Image (tube, rainbow, N blue to C red; front, side, top):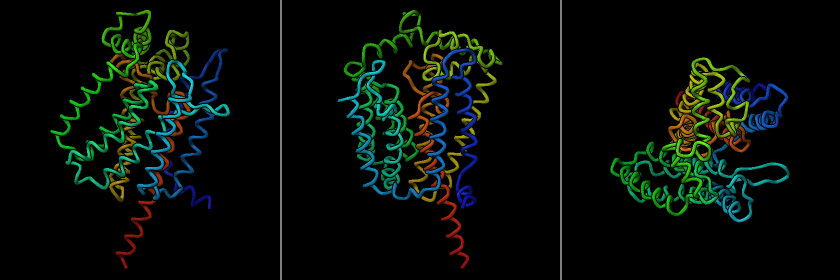
Amino acid sequence: MVYTFARRIDWLLLVLVLPLVGAGLVTMKTLGGGSDYFFLNQITWLAVGIGVFLLFSVLDWEFLKRSMVLVIFYGVGIGLLLFLLMRAPAVRGAASWISFSGITLEPSDPMKLILILLLAKYFSRRHIEIARARHVIISGLYAAVPMFLVLLQPDFGSAMIIGALWLGMILVSGVKKRQLLVLLLLGAILFAVGWGVFLEPYQKLRIRTFLDPFTDPQGAGYNALQSVVAVGSGQLFGKGVGFGAQSRLGFLPEHETDFMFAAFAEEWGLVGVTVLFSFFGFLLARILSYALRGKDNFERLFAVGVAVLIVAHVVIHAGMNVGLLPITGISLPFLSYGGSHLVTLFAALGILASFGQEQTIFSRREAWQKEW
């Protein structure tokens, strides 16, 4: 039984993830006499995440291909986001977390996974008809509702990720160039409306200081400047583990979450960053291999959606850490502190691995039938 269980696990997928998690743990580990609160908590979430990955890898997720099941999950996710707006207290200016029995959940993270599943189902049935504008609009509404609710928290970063998920999956599904131009124009209009209606003053200030951090170097532009300094000071080989002055001495706030990349780059340098991105590349290649051998459009699109989720997080997080994007508070996948984000990623990979196992069984059964 143990042997059968082990054979159903994609150990390569897990092996590719562990160095990324390890890099985050080393970066947030206090080597002196400070508190290891984030380090110890992240180890606990890592154990939970691996357990979820192993369990999800051996379960049969075929029921996720039923529209009614996905609609129920979508409704639950929207309900949690609405609950945040009505009841959850604001933490650091945003009502983004639900706390119960000492455990904190950020509903926007599982909502991203639910949206991937929902869009994969929608596009898998309409991959030929996607050229019709109404399918673009309907799928956009599926993404717009959680995006709008997340913006109201306000959490501009997660809203960007949700938008990137929809855009990435609709591009893969075969949207026309003319429709893409209309989407870009619509996005510009929505940004203009969001600027005037939804964005909080501090978010507008972040965008202004992104364009010119020196307009407020001791205020809104402080984090952006310190992050760029941290990345640049790492140079080629970095300052060494535990010797990152910007993060260890407190000049770079929240280095275990929003500025994990900057903290890592300072201690590991360009060489370390190159190795880090290489592991992300290997992981994405493994994920996309599931897309190539998926037995139906749903599984292929789900794999693409998981890849888009990781790429969007990496690009936005690294971009804001090096001064190319405004500070939005986006986690670096598998490295940044946070249980909801980490467990959600492991859950997504577990479902993906389960589909891969079903593909193997399906392929063998089909080959056996053809042979006989």
